[in-house]
Image (tube, rainbow, N blue to C red):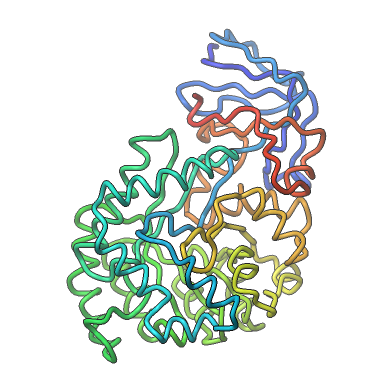
Amino acid sequence: MRCDRLWTNARLATMRADRSGLGIVENGVVAALDGRILFAGHADELPSLDAEERIDCEGRWITPGLIDCHTHLVHGGSRAHEFELRLAGASYEEIARAGGGILSTMRATRAASEDELLAGALGRLDALMSEGATTVEVKSGYGLDLETEVRMLRTARRLETLRPVRIATTFLGAHALPPEFADDADGYISILCADVLPKVAALGLADAVDVFCEEIGFSPAQARRMFDAAARHGLPVKLHAEQLSDLHGAQMAAGYGALSVDHLEYLDEEGIAALARAGTVATLLPGAFYFVRETKLPPVEALRLAGVPMALATDCNPGTSPLTSLLLTMNMGATLFRLTVDECLIAVTRNAAKALGLFDRIGTLEAGKSCDLAIWSVERPAELVYRMGQNPLHTRIWSGQ
């Protein structure tokens, strides 16, 4: 049997669910053929292979490529001035209601060309890739009209033609109420469902549909309308929910079999139980929690006890989490949310893959999955969560290359 590449003399953190903890394999090897993992396990169990190339990892650790399952990578402009306002005491809600927040980025994004959006997004993507990210989700939601939403999603799709990375796109037209529909949220949702989403789906630009379900966003009833429209186009759903209040959006989204519900600081017991029943991933976003100086912690212990899979993501966006480091995200997940080292690492691999509906393709080191690897110069996996500001990535492998 032949293989394209064989990585030897490695220690593996396979992240496989059928093994305890991180699924650690000492004296491990990984074999790749045609961009997929042919074998990942102990060297003694390796079948006879004729490898075109052998790479000695010299005892380094191999994990699956990291996955950022919640970003707003494509946008125009900056919101540094709002950061200054928050430092002076203004709340996120006050800034949003005064025309800042998402609407500020909407204006900058509408004014930007596709090439300008692409240039900005590439810089942010490169930062994530430099720390081992091989899959990145990118949402729209800063256009809030058909033309700009399509431009954002098309830009996101272009990213993977220019970089060796997998991009998952999410249509987030229901991110905020545009000025054209001031005081008419139901009317805006009607346009999204009847016109914008069908055209986005017809163009094949979205892999999922998301909604910002909050008092300053959209109600659970309006989110249901978006989810029903997504179902008509065969698209899975996700939800921003329970970040600033508890509207019971998570419980509603779980009823639709949502891939993930994200933020969740105000998630209640009924919502936790609903996520557990549905197998929906709870995606925690410590960068936003830190950046806007929230004090209400997500119910991590209750999620843990209920067996709800937890993912971590950067929530990279210009207003509340200008973060482009999954390594720092893991550190924040541990220090702010009290996740364990194992939970943090699983959160940006196995569970992040589930949050994107891609677990059959990525997220663990096992035969048949894409050969997306991060090879680290560390003594133990805990260093990936422990260190701040140091990048120990030795080599990043995407689809076997």
